[in-house]
Image (cartoon, rainbow, N blue to C red; front, side, top):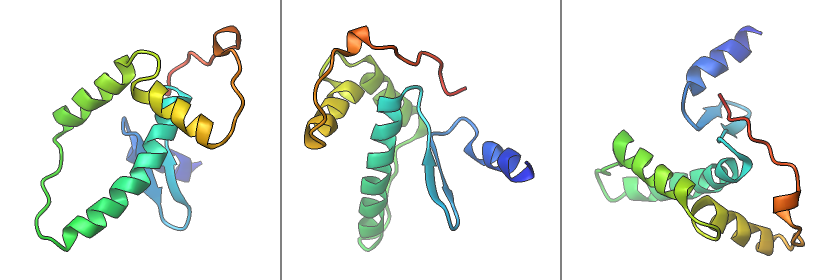
Length: 110
């Protein structure tokens, strides 16, 4: 139980945490956001590793990150998190089903 509390403190209000010997954990307000974070966490880690060889890296500020996330959340159908979701669903060859008629999880992560 202590480890769970410690992990919750590390994750805080963030979207991901790396656990030694276990890999990463990502969270989101909904599945599409969590999947986007998981995919881009790996892509960005690889880019960061490559950029370190070039010298100093200027990271986005917390405010810049929040602005980008807000744009992705506000995207219309086929844009933002939804656009990424549609793309990955097609790549995985998951057949389309009418998501408007299926139950959705509306509870946030916090």
